[in-house]
Length: 404
Ligand SMILES: Cc1ncc(COP(=O)(O)O)c(C=O)c1O
Image (spheres, rainbow, N blue to C red):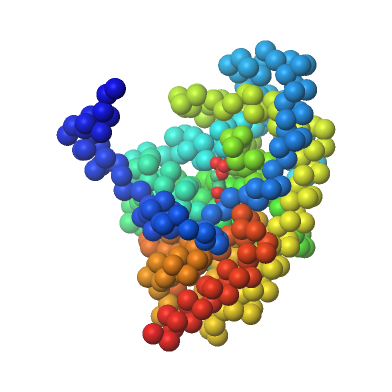
């Protein structure tokens, strides 16, 4: 037996030193004691509701009908066709399967879009706060990040205009704006129609692309949401990415990117040298969706998540100290909690974990590390009945911090 722990060299140590910037371990909980904790940390889907039985049946069905294309190297074209039809109905966008490229999750779609657009030193403008998974992808491509401020209604267009003007004056090249306009991660905010239109005009005027990430599409619990930026775009500057991770299962690794010009998707696809997504997953998901099961499952998820969201809003009302405020998302997985300035949510995380509750400090959602008085609360994975006790504990930890 070879002892792998002896297999270390300067080469590997250097590689580790260069590449292991990564996220601090404090909130990824890997080093934490194996104790029962109520966790609001991760934006993962509700586990008991995974449609495992239906997926097993569909898998049997597609295997008996057409095993070869599923198990062969290939591309799950039926899924692209389903999505194109869905988008046509949902958004009134006149597209075909050629306007969509299926990827291994939307994470890969974001990464491939970067490969299409970015050169070292280019700037990407992101919302502040935003989904740091995407920021990490931008930084992996040697991009610089500029943060555009938001208010309760999302991106502030005038501030974004000023930022783009300033970056240009400084000789910095902005390639695209990355936005999550609907049920934003981490704030849950949704950008209104007028701002959406203004954002497209602004981007066009500054000659930058928009990467629209709609990871939580369909998970609407209240009211209506405006059309996609892609739908509203008369210029062909919006690239839109979506995923089945939230409405079906992230383990299937199915996402997509869409845009007006299919030729660009051919180029994006040619940049994918890490291998395509799983045709196996893609064919199964396509059949699942074609049989109406995705729509049915999404309706069930809406009920589950709406109840969790409402439970969380009620708990926040009850347990958060004066001077706190939080968002009331129409959909998605997250609520953004802003505490009085003097509360440092990074500092008190250890205390919260000891008391049995875990969360994501707001600073993990800013490229600049701001937001230390904020918390992202995910209500998606936590059990319904754990939300109230979890928030009670969190409220106690925060109150102690305010007293001390
Ligand atoms: C806003 C946003 N975009 C993209 C992703 C990536 O999802 P996936 O790669 O599973 O499609 C996530 C996952 O949390 C997300 O929150």
